[in-house]
Length: 184
Image (cartoon, rainbow, N blue to C red; front, side, top):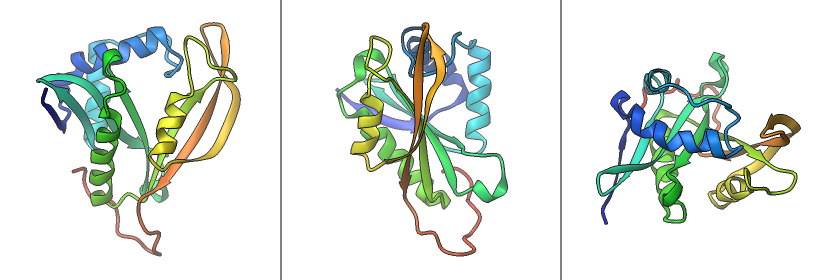
């Protein structure tokens, strides 16, 4: 079995959407109710890759997961901070692909001059068939720390879910930092 990490291109939209679809329909990991169209998903990819890294991992030539950085907030003073997202195909969990994707993403973001990584993570009051604490635990293992929480802020599948923010610092916070560089 061979694995490869590469940058996502807009033509990957259909394959990535096939992974994301199960998260929308079967989990409370994403708070979307409806699966976006391929065209909408392609537009999301195009917007992201214009500024930030968007990568995928392939197993024997097939995309089995992806991760990307996006704008944390739409103001210039926030440019050194990004929000991360990651999704793996249903049968690809537990193989270390998430760790590989985040390591690659973090390296690319450091080269851009990014200092802070954030993850906005859904979590349940009590684990259920739609949501576990696996994402919080995954991020904790990678050095993220909880920095905030919103209780009962989203309702999906007729249940209320919480959201937590996790943070990882990857750069020095010098005064007057260089502006971030183009995505690597």
